[in-house]
Amino acid sequence: MVRAGSVSEDYVPASGSSSVNGSSSMRHCRSVESLGEWRSCEQVENGMPSTSPPYWDSDDDDDSGPKPSDLYGKFTWKIEHFSQINKRELRSNAFEVGGYKWYILIYPQGCDACNHLSLFLCVANHDKLLPGWSHFALFTIAVINKDQKRNKYNDTLHRFWKKEHDWGWKKFMEINKISDGFVDDDTLTIKAEVQVIREKAHRPFRCLDSQYRRELIRVYLSAVEQTCARFVDDRRQKLKTLIGDKTKWSSFHAFWLGIDQNTRWHMSRDKTDAILKVVVKHFFIEKEVASTLVMDSLYIGLKALKSQSKIKEVRANKLEKEDLPAPIVLVEKDMFVLAEDVFLLLERAALESPHLSLPSKEEKGLPIRSKDGCSGDEFNKDSILRDERRLTELGRRTLEIFVLAHIFSNRIEIAYQEAVALRRQEELILEEEKAEKAENEKREKRAKKKQRNFASCTHASILVNEVCFRET
Image 1 (cartoon, rainbow, N blue to C red):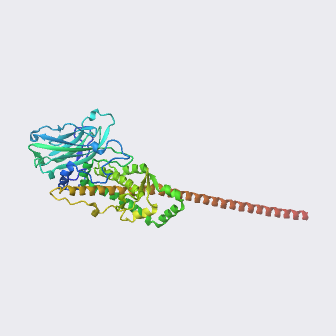
Image 2: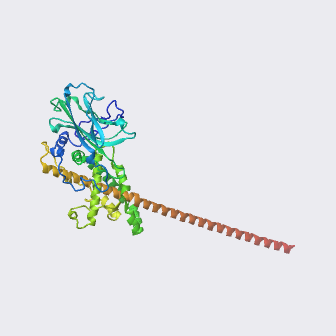
Image 3: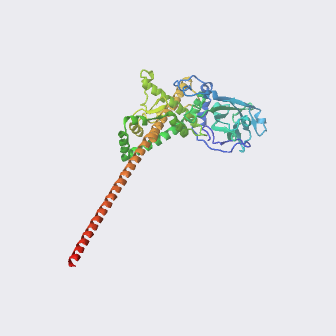
């Protein structure tokens, strides 16, 4: 996909490598100017103290191994005497990120693409790695302009392996634009940011280093919102359809009220690992940069649910005073538990109650950026805090709707269908028994009638014999 802040480009393996050729296009989320303003913001480049909730920038409890910050790195490559280069391709020095060595590959006159500068990120020692190796990485490559607002950026997400050990853009930018501020003192500067990702199939995972996330969130937040809203709207529409079927909805209610309280309690919960595995499979999409932020959002949303569950237990907690929405789901050890009766929650979700709906645009707190870039530390702290709270809310609410729908469809609805099937089976058995009984009764009637007919014939025969005897 070709990313926001860039002209439509192709990102593919470098020509002549063992990689498989491919291309795709990415939708724009923000203009080149606004992207440049955010990316060139000094506060982000140099980092700043976090103003986020304590669980935003920490990986604790159920996480182990290297953290995203340990798997993230930057690299700057200055190509001097750029106008004198007559080689088809150039390679940067190798640099290490996330335990792997990388290098940047550049084609000054284009790779299978005339009049374009081609850029690729490559695994440096791919031929020496063990068979079956692969690692997943999100990376950004930028060509720097003297005017920081005009820097040229592209991001992509890719799984590097034997046949795709280099990945990038054949049409990163047009060659005739390089002279427009990108070459300073005959030096072309290229910067790369690489984030190796530890994906987990069994639950959402923290993807991004905090500074890299803050950089990308300004570009892809709207894509995360669309992903979450699309999922929530789809589930709500299905609920509305179900509730609109009065006969079926009443039948569900009758089934639910007809089972004992202990069974209802067990059916209103499920293992977190079982549900989170399905969450990851549904939301993490390879090649989509925004899916890394979706994972971050769901990861933090899960932590917020756990925190909210603790707040519910510890009433003295000072966070209890915050205006938190009524919970749909609580986390108890290794279980997701519905906070109320499932049918009350389903009706609330279908009716789009304010505390269930995704935050409105007014709640986003996304400021309109001025063309002069960043406007002070406080402004950026507030902006970052709003963005991260937004991601938390998106993740928490999406996860709650997912868990509610999952428990209903995979436990309660299945149990209902089994009960309906069992009842139907019992009815069929009763119908068969009635039919068999009716058939038996018919047989008995026929037998009795036959006996009566036989008796009548016998009696008549006797009378005839008696008459004949008398006449004789």
